[in-house]
Length: 165
Image (cartoon, rainbow, N blue to C red; front, side, top):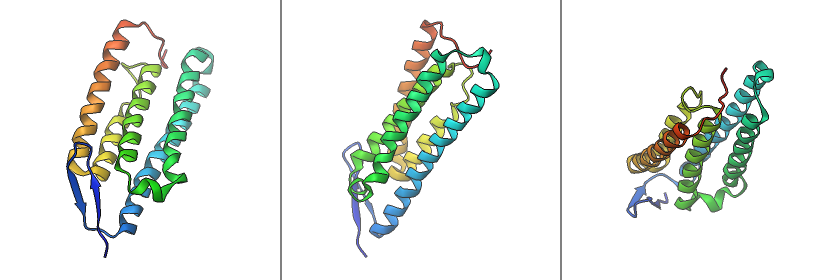
């Protein structure tokens, strides 16, 4: 039985006593869930566009679709190079950080006071906790809080349209 050591973001190390294939399977499930959530958000955006199409401008939907496409392409890195990504902690940390940034942009473009995408922050923190344990979940929660604070400051200063009437 082989063990693998993952370096955690803050510089410590976390010893995982699972075989390499079990760790790889767990990471594959987590990244599969992340990609599945992106597809779900894409279909939710399509449904909202179909329901409220005549009331919404392309200034709202084009950035939302752009963020989703870029986020999905970045998430597909793990599926293209799973063996290489499995041992690189910084790849997972970067993907989770970019996911939080993408969620922040989705909330910004869809209206920060009433966005349906707030729950994605929590899902991202939980999935980061599954990969990086407690320290990773706390780090992701801190990053998410920072982004959300910046979002509130930005959205309060701009008079953006939102996805709702």
